[in-house]
Length: 579
Ligand code: ADA
Image (tube, rainbow, N blue to C red):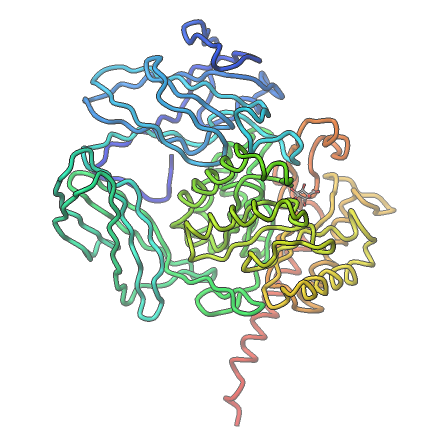
């Protein structure tokens, strides 16, 4: 797994990426499987989506992955999976050691190993079955690819190890960070020397006594002279923790994200967030995007003049967030889900899965400075009184894990009475004027009506983000009548939307166009019949990242807005200097 910095110098960590043995087992229950009967007659790349490969395209069922490890010593080993879709059960030498439900999030499983070869088998299930993967449901508007979709690593742990490090900006003036080091020890009491370095300068060096198996050590570290992170100057720093013969390096950026009236402030300055919704999907790779595609996406987002991306509708790959940290692209990271109903939120197993997904989302993305807000419950039934408890529980869970970032959800119930807007720091609205409702010349009026609704709901003092808006365009389809589905219509609609939101009036704090790239949608007839080609065609690039007509329009307009903002700043910065 290629993170953009080395996470460990002392701890032995091996990448298990490569080609594993593979078998498509079929439409059977995992409990009914005898591992000895599995015939591994195929191979599969890891990371990868088996159902994005021609041989298994479109197939759903139970599959099996196998690899052989060669362990050097007797120790506690930790298998770290960045994501498996969407359910898996793990075996070491045919002994079950763990299980995980839900794709898009990191999880780990430990086992005690002895020197020599061990066999790892993963049973993986990509079926859209509430039984084993409540968050992956067939009515969603994206194709749920399956497999070991992100990198896998094998850690060798010592008696005492660093389990997690969190870095939070304390203040910018004077610059300080708060560092929390979670430590686990197999033996108590224990003593160990803890060292914390930032950019190779030692800030903490102390002998610590560990009285409990799990403990968290907190430090406030002054960082005079250290540069801060912002979209225009994405400065990053490396924090290295050493604990006896274990270690962990994390990368962070010092910055503050605040909601101030109707604006979003980063480091005390109002920012206009301009960008897109982005699915992690590609016809050839499914959800298992190689770094090439991630880098291509970031290059194009920057080329378009974006400083913002909403990871719709699930937690994003850490490698993509690394690239956003470096590019200064602000990210809305969102828990997995789509148009949840009261029934979902009242279902204990669903809510448990959603809360666990939130826990894993925050744990994975916590230290990334590019992550400027958390989201969840995309277009859930937030107008239904029966959902209010579920909304409060999910959004409160996020806040309990991180109170340093604003929290929101994308609502498509603003005109018809959203009941949960009091729970968010900023109001996010999904609206499709000129596509699903109204005609293109009615867009300004429809948007204005939505803002009036926000005001009358008593939420007008909060920032507004248009979290989805757009139109479909079949790649390459241009026609003299330029109606819906043509590239001309999409370009024209987005021009009207962007002018209305940012050049004619400046009510909103941000925009995430729906969407960056075309994606395959769910295969159910009810979904696919409304999706030409079986794709959601609202991308401004197609699924292979080839630009449509709208690409050039957006690039021009985002650049116009940026120069407008610069002039505005230079004008205001000039105020008072003329006598
Ligand atoms: C909704 C949903 C998106 C997508 C979009 C569309 O806003 O949040 O995931 O389905 O509609 O294309 O209709």
